[in-house]
Amino acid sequence: MEIHARGGSISFWVRVVPRASRDAIEGEFQGALKVRLTAPPVEDRANEALRRLLAARLNVPTSAVTIVTGGKGRTKRVSIAGVTEEQAVELLAGASS
Image 1: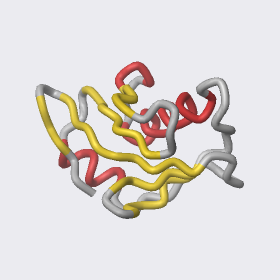
Image 2: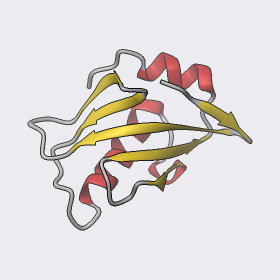
Image 3: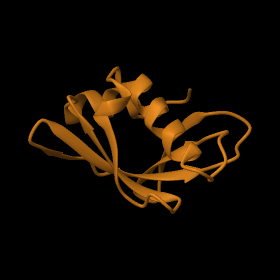
């Protein structure tokens, strides 16, 4: 998974699997972080669940997590403020929640 650091924030690709049996960070899949969410992909519920899950895992407020592109698709680019690349790798690598 490629993580870009810029100006006090990081960004990376996420592949979301909505309507899963549990919320979980599955690790890397085709260059993106694979995330399973119980939320359905309607009315931004899956996007909000993704923001909450990443914020909790990276110990930042939900407001620090922004979906940059892919708001309507399964593949998204997210930006997270206040986290270094090293912290993200440590907290997300091989993580399962």
